[in-house]
Image (cartoon, rainbow, N blue to C red; front, side, top):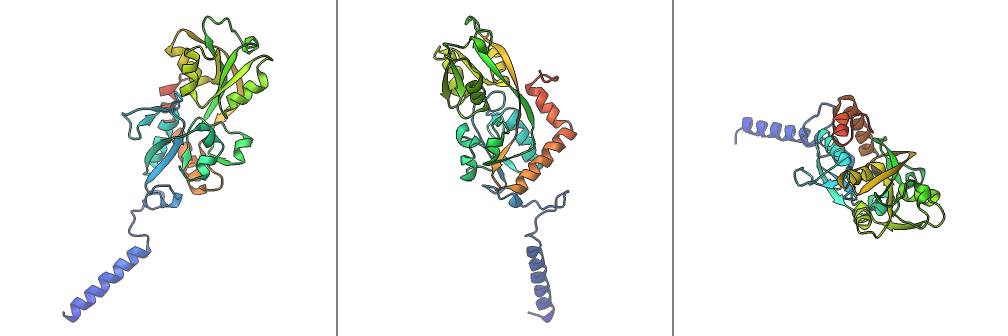
Length: 274
């Protein structure tokens, strides 16, 4: 080997060392970060945003084989747009809502983010960090069309289905008349069939979900809505992923600014929000 070859080899090695020290040669992104598979977010799986959700909960979460994650719905479509903007894949794990809203699933590191129409409450904030609100919701009462039930005041003697661990359950416990029986179910996937089978006489839960049932089957009516001032947020393990939380909030604002949020909203709800 000549002296010139030795010098060239040393230079090449030095250049490789400099690239390694600068982060392994990751491509610089437009925001000054590096395309490093989301390493700055401490993800469960590098390059993938893992979301936990209780499915189905139409129109927020539903199975959909036509999408990259195998799921769609308002929550999931929003999260897919966020993941795309962060150059991450999106994967969805179907979990118990009660374990998710209590923070157990997130604390266990099963997922990076919870996306399951989760209402932001002070009680939940003791165990969960929430994103900025992304949806305003109401509670509502769904009953058989021939039940004669016109309001919550008519529920004495009726068994009312509620989803365990939800704000709908809390509202029902505080507002149904004496003599009403509350039956807890894991999710809407169990509530709706129970109502159809006559095992319960009504469902009290989030308005958009009950609207979908009333639209799907004319034998059921949404007879009352309750303005509880609720807002949904994406959930994170308490103090576990501050960088990801900050990035999700930034992307939520960006989606609002560029019109993408409104497009997704309008695809599931009427343009005026009714």
